[in-house]
Length: 228
Image (cartoon, rainbow, N blue to C red; front, side):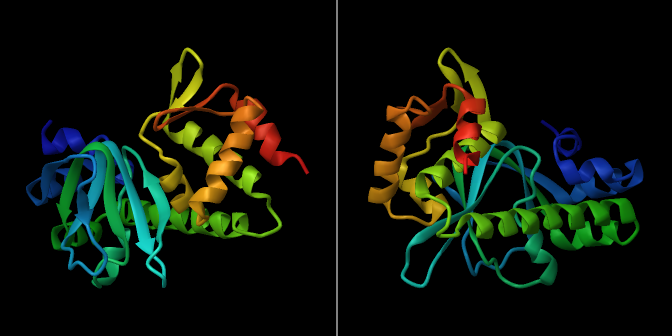
């Protein structure tokens, strides 16, 4: 895949005009990452925008007692680190969940192009706004008024929407998702999540096959977490 071909896969770059894309080509490279590798770590000095071309990446942070907390799971087309607009070190860690190809765009060159292309600048702003809205939604779902099993059902439904592939038993979330990592995404204890996942499997709402989750009926799962 060439850099110009890679541009077609990145959501924000679809808003750039042809002249801007041509100007961006010298600032772009493509890197390959294996599952478990990190693209960057918190406090790293970063001089590139990283965009997912293939595979899946996770953004996470450690809390004050060194517990890992998942923030976002990102798929093809996403920018991983718009925050480097402020020129400060990375505020999150980025880990590869599924072997990935990543487009790297040199920051200063990208800035120079954005100065001349408002459509591209707005697309970056829209990407940041979407993440803010998702964070606001996550804060709402951390409320103690929402039962843990419903929070898990909601998270699995969303993951099956964003990363689901059809299989004989329903919709499979297409990356390894352990109970431990699911607990990190929810900010819960592993033992609690394990118990609540078992409740969902006993009701036929979820199938756990090693490290893969399968949703037999997404509408039924949605109805479950929306019940009052």
